[in-house]
Length: 341
Image (tube, rainbow, N blue to C red; front, side, top):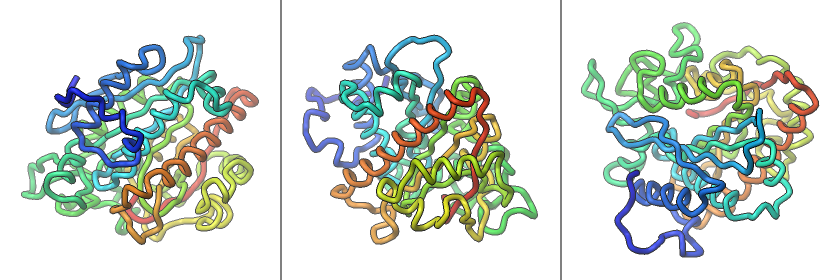
């Protein structure tokens, strides 16, 4: 496993989780977190990036109860959204160190394992630290163009780059920021995630993809204006569970949850693909802020952004547990999406 050659544990500082970290530091953190919590945290290599960097997911577990369900969380699909990997680190640290004093976390881990992919786009993330802070895509080389990179959140097989459906939501042009790739799952990063979820589709009941910015909670479909199955069921559940005080923009920006549509659809998104796979609770989080700092959110805002999202994740996860226990064959989701997600 790739680690940083450092004799001291960078997590020893009380402010470690209130700073952004290089890719090397994150790999080191993954290794040490798994080593220090062997009964609760396991690192799983699910694939590698275009530039052959490892894609490690952390499995958080409390027990080996049979027929246990799971949650999937991925961060850093878009390279410039640094608050996203910061949240994944924050979440894993919270879960692995809370000693189950949190009733919400205890209930989640008793009923579900959690898979966390801290950096889905390591090549792009590395590039934002060394060359271009605002880089979005991965770093794959196009065979048809001198331009580099594919938008991994347009590379999934959910109305992928559909002609006649897209206005500005995805593009066949390699030089754009929303280039969808040569074909669905053309990129090793999206293929690795898709393969893992296909393998665990009967287990994973909740899919979460963490992005920034705009403080919004988004649901399928974004690749079409159609509503997903049992749209009203999910909307009513979120109306009750995710209050404005927990995730303000869910109510304030979307109004009645789930009725907002962007002007431009976003085909090829991971959340729509996961929903179509059968993971009927599929969400995209857009973390802070609402545009003042945008992708350049200062480290001083990390704690507030992560705590806000953490509370929403716990609330939704426990709502999913409640619904699936009450309804053995749940079906869901809703509709929304915004900006270039």
